[in-house]
Length: 302
Image (tube, rainbow, N blue to C red; front, side, top):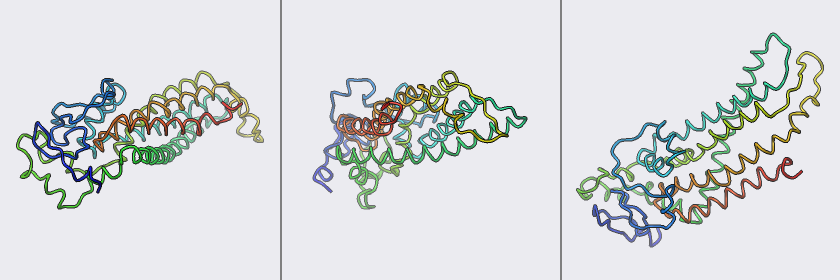
């Protein structure tokens, strides 16, 4: 442990000890340090007393309207975080996107419904694998950036992965009677890092809906003969459509800006660390990912 992990900072409201580099009291939620970035509503730390967990669909709505409140609420019951629901919903939308693409092929077949369902299932299964793998890779990358910015892994280990002897000091008997988080709510849980950080991918729900509408309206329609010899050139009209640039631009902006903002709030709530330092590292990583995975594609290069 570093010096910051061993020196304690006593909360002036509840009297419990926190790390000296804690930005809020882990027991009563009082801010111990203030950052200028908190003047922006989206980054303002919540200091209200937490009583009962909000429903997952309420938290999902707040991820779009009040992300600071959403992650504050999620952080108090991380095991109930809707992160995996968000991944599943994105996979379902990906399946619908497959149907949107398929709608641009004119297929003269009595088994059109079966073809459509097979397309939906194929895109759904691919979406499940894609969003889980892509999500884990993104979280790993953002986590690496947070390690450099605020020692994210060390703070999680100190906060949630300590020895039993270290956890004793957070027992009910040792805590101040003025603590509003009875039993040390934040400390007595597992980290559930991935489940919470997956919530930062909620913007994909909106972008997938927008992408579906764009696919339905902007792509050309071509005939597809499912009984005759297969002609791969039939897909050229779809693959060469300038609409791809619009789709990739939307996804790139989300990866470069929106998701880094949400992941930064998630990390700062998990680790009780600086918003500014985490945000700078997350934006840097998000911009690099957007450039490599989207702006380097032929739709932009050409």
